[in-house]
Image 1: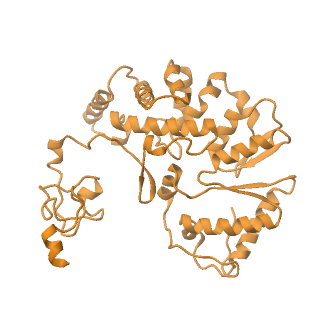
Image 2 (image 1 turned 180 degrees about the vertical axis):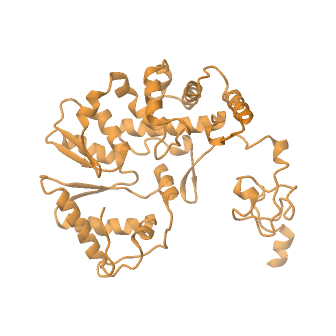
Image 3 (image 1 turned 120 degrees about the vertical axis):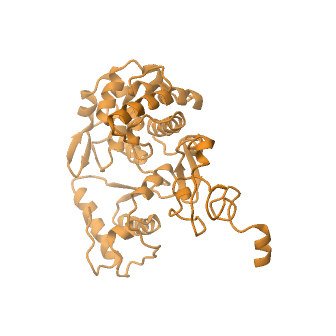
Length: 375
């Protein structure tokens, strides 16, 4: 929302943000600014996905003139943290309350808004639908007026809640998480609104209730999620693999196959369900990372949490034997067809034979004999 002018110092940029916040809060008795944290959390995966033209890590000083384009600078989370540090210092000097979260800010924004709304009316300014959904779910009837404002307009949260039926209020958080959000993939070919209406009109309450249960086991979550996918594809009681095969056959006969519109495999549906459960619980408890993400569809990698697509093999072993590359390099980048498809190089590969590259099953690199000679 704040423009950067060429030749400005970082302090002048910070003052522009200050003027923007002061303008928004000129009618308020108190203004609270809540910043996202950029430590390791599942939502950081979406930050990386959205990155387009990031630049290297930069250190900034208030008197230093900025030269890097705004978009490139902010696409680097380390740089964004540097800017937030400067903004926080500038805001606090002008008596603006600042909260810096450890990770996702959405739950903290909602907590602050609900706490403040017990004594006075509150306006929450954000562009994230997740915040609105949580406000609608959690707002009690005794609160003062609570408004949610975006660049497109302002909305009375209580009126939105009152427009929903009791069932819709109950399952709102689950439906929003399961049908796709920052940490859970959307279901191709099935819109959020359509699925929300179907879920709330259907007879799958006992399965949706599992996602609202803070004590639910992972096996129960996976089973409930699988049943809900069967309901989405109008085939209750039919294995997802069979549904997938039948739909593929119909589409192949019609001459048009879009793989993303096929039902997920059993393994992919399981991981999707675990991630949806984790996100629903975070929103219910208003606590980011309320459970260990590594137990619910995520794995901790070099760049933070990365989603687990499935625990099943990509294809039967006999089919994978026909998947091979013919790279002249070390198979370390996406030019290698094996690396690009997420499989290890095998003996059928033309040059490396699955033993002398960085994408082989035993960890890559040169053989022991060659390494000794090199040393």
